[in-house]
Amino acid sequence: MKNWQKIDRKNRDFEVTLKNGDKLWGSFPLADDEDIFGHETVGFLSWEKKESFFKAIQGKANITIDEILQFVAPIPHDSIESMTESEKSIGGISLIGNKPIPDGLQLRVHNYGKPGFVRITYKTPGNHKEFEIGELKIVNGEVTLPLMLAFVSYAREDQAVVKEILKELNDHGVLTWFDENELMPGDHWERKIEEAIEKSENVIVFFSGKTLERSGYKNKEIRYILDQAKYRPLGARYIIPVLLDDCKPPHEFKELHWLSHGRSGWLEKLVNVLK
Image (tube, rainbow, N blue to C red):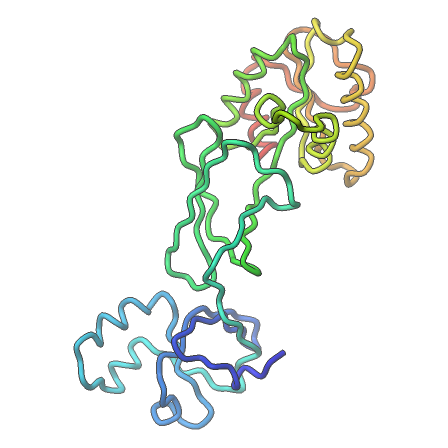
């Protein structure tokens, strides 16, 4: 690691790690630190005070030490463990775990002043409500969104009711992978579905009396989901069965707690698991 004292600190923002473990974000605005603070001491301006500092000195030819000390804090050299320049540019945004970003997800990036960080809000597909993610650090030009993704497994016979449920989930800020929205012409659809199952934190499996006896790709998809569950941490929630009517869940799901669509509080429970 480059000696922090050899870093050009002029007109730059930094993340400073102190030897006691504390982290600071800000800049070093003074050219003559030691003349003001003494030997082997630097003057640090935290990002929270930066705007007030420059307003206070605006138009002034001379500034007193007392005025400087209202904003700039002395930090001894021997208390600094390291410092790295804060990143400013974003080259890409991804979901944690390199999950596919759902089609139609709208993101807004807000610069609120903290060096090396941005604040991000998002809208789910077809939704006008904006959800707050909070401050996120820029790392190697990338911002990673700490959002969970739920794969949606259903049969075509239940598509209409499933779409209504997904709209309610989206209204609560839940990200879902729904094949009708995500599969594009020319996609190798089977492999794309398998990749989404593998990378999603949860899989919502919808069952109804109309679909339980159905054969074909639906059952193949279910088998793949059950196989993926074996690779998840013991006790982790992965498969979430939802019964759309009074049907009984398949034998393979008998050890899992399921939700019954329409029962009191069922949607709130589902949202809590998925966020």
